[in-house]
Image (cartoon, rainbow over all chains, first blue to last red; front, side):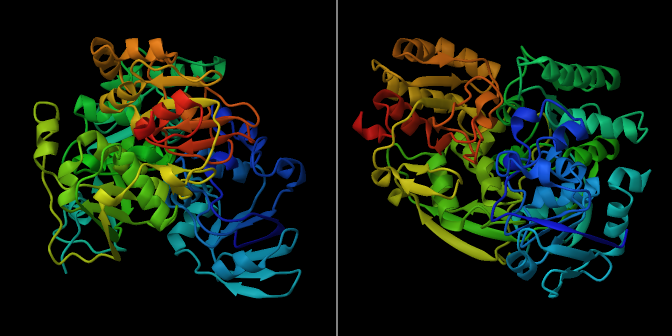
Length: 160
Length: 419
């Protein structure tokens, strides 16, 4: 998986893991059940609107709060192909890599890109292209071993 | 270049003489923790890996605290899965109903963490143990599984922010007010990826419970860990309790810090974080008239004996306001027993509060006190995100046990000095 392309679901600062997947649904580890409630407390229409391959874009400190790995799992299982944010909270950042959810830190892209834009992301170069406006952005690509972890679908498949 | 206290603990566990901020290291773990929400995912990963043993049956703790006593069938299934795993692999520190407590109240109490320990836990508030001079940090379930298998984890060595605490806190100002004040100053990502190292003469006025509360909420500023130096207060708490061998680390005089904040504890006031971020702080003098429906006193932040004593001190011979529900959750079985023997439960029940078994319960909107649409709670917990304690249109105001108890009496957010 070298690149992805999809429609943007845009959010603001400090999107916490409680709104990504509320704790009332943490009595399951089923990826499908978690995905069915993804973003429910911040965007109740998300699960109806999201399509396989869509991209999530948010501003600073995405994924703050609880260490629940259910949060990146829910996003990935909902069909999101990449999350772009100005910054990520550290536990979410690590969890996303570990479960194979592609993420990119790029402040300029996170501010410019709007809800509904079509965006493509090249994981090898770190180039983010807003296909709607034609503008491109450069994020720092992950080193090869991290890219491999994500491409294999997470740390466990990587080390197996 | 010198090292911070956090860096020294990481270096020692990586078998290195020196580490630098930004360096990637692999380090040996003294404790790997999980709860009933995160452990099932870790157990699935463990089994998916084909692992057939854990690295050390003494160095894994599994605490069934979030949705216990089980609130529904799915939660019961999760606990069953973890209980079976713990039995199969001989996990010594498996704590179920009857022995369990809220994990971050329980592990220090049982002496499973102490000075110099390196701890990861699949719970973001694992940073609590920095109060005892440990390096401890929250991770996800996959890292927990890898830790259980290998006894190791990789870390990016963090840089640090130093907080010099000076002076003596005024009456009714506790660890909770100090950490809320700090988060209000630096913001919920003010320490992102970094260590928060606390120092200064002011920490001599802070009890272990105050320090545990402060380190607990380091994550609410985005920090990787929060840490206190080891002093006589730490030693007195850990002596005869800590099951490992304490190692005291001190930051080098020439350690480099990204920023240094000096905070005069004597100038702080009781502090409240308004919805929906812990950084939205106001002093008690600025809160205005905020009517409330529920008060929660407990959690890994403020469910310790001294917290319950403070609440009882405020509630003694008083009645909880009509229309307010006050829920008190002692952190562990031992805290529960001690509070009962001290007569604190008489005070609570006579005032009109209820006392629960230990559980994380309402803090994360799990059970034992969920808010309806439009309701407001004053809570001694650690997060006030949208929908955190229940309905997406409910509100949580974070405060100390003293402010929470005073608010329960009046039905409005209230200065404990005024009841």
